[in-house]
Image (tube, rainbow, N blue to C red; front, side, top):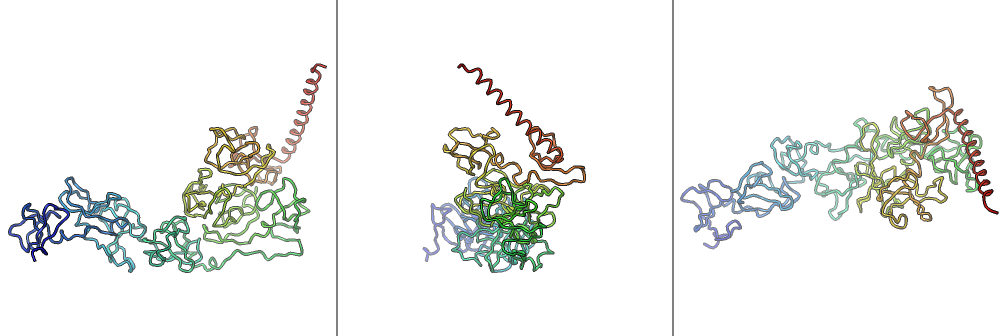
Length: 565
């Protein structure tokens, strides 16, 4: 019987502790530093060491504590040095405390005991403001934080703490990236099988910890972090708009007779050409502003060309980062026809999908959500809410109005690789007018392309980053920046003319050169000049070329005359 009343406690390993029903004198507990005046307690007779029965029977470890659910807390004996409790922010050195070895988090036993360690996680949380300053882990998002840094709320049922921003998330929301209503699930492990280790957020393409809360759609298994839905949420007026749910990519009601096509954006009939021999040099597709290739449609009356795929684009299209359906537009909102793309940040002519001032050119809008790029070994997924920089250029696309990133990037879930829209739409093969061979887009900076330790662009002769993508010709060991090859504005139709109310002559787009006068246009590489002036310049350039040829012939004749016979 006596042996049953004896324990060996980790805090006092020298001797066993004996359970006594009552103590003759008032003593202090060595576990909580409070008086032991009545009730059962444990005592070491040789050392006069005392512990409340409740202090002696404290669990040696706590898992999933509401204030620190990510790691296990281990019970420690009183320390010789002062310990700082991360809950009550008080110092003490004469009490038991729970310690996390992973992140140096401490809780004294009083703070640890006032929070239930086995809450009922099947209820719907009822949050109320919490004003005490403590360190805590948000039960909804899993982030460690202090109430001094972010306001918190506490569930009145289970006493769990959450950031106020997380606690106030709506129970159901409608976002642009999914057709269904999403439901807030406090613990995703309740609806998603635990064996699914690789569950990724549909908006940022990063792993989702199923222990915490998230938004979920049971119909299509759409999952997202709490924080990611903020930039993609539909305005309240749109959440009940059923037309957004029902809309698909809508094709034109085509008027076709054989190989003839009629479209709203061109006044004449378009005739198809399937023969590569018929491809005209230096002609651009009026839709995507890229070199024309078979099969394509053309207008015999006005030199108008259109790829077959561009001619059959849907009239309306859904885009995951915008809450409204986008409509195909063949002309820009401005008189010069140039528009700004919200995805790649570039200026271009050509077709676009628009909604009021929101515009995506058809190249960016046509990229699928899952992209297999030839320059990267893994598939890339469109991460709408991602703020990562592009690995191909170390840049990130910002909105020209609010200077914040938008439309996200394409990320690799296997190797932490990100690709921006501007680099994702670079052509795999490109031609440079002063180089005889086609150039290939690559990212491999090896001796195969450049055997020197210094990396330079052979067009602008400036240093380039060896980690960035570049164009190269293996035959000639020729390497260059992408923008030096394709140009600062590769999708501007240079040579196109337009009428401006601010000038009496027809204006034409030309490339700006070092000899051009300073311009006040938004793009430093664009220049508008009167067509009359352009014709005169072309005549002057042709005359200069003829004069240069004559000078070259004269010098060659002089050199031959001086040679000894």
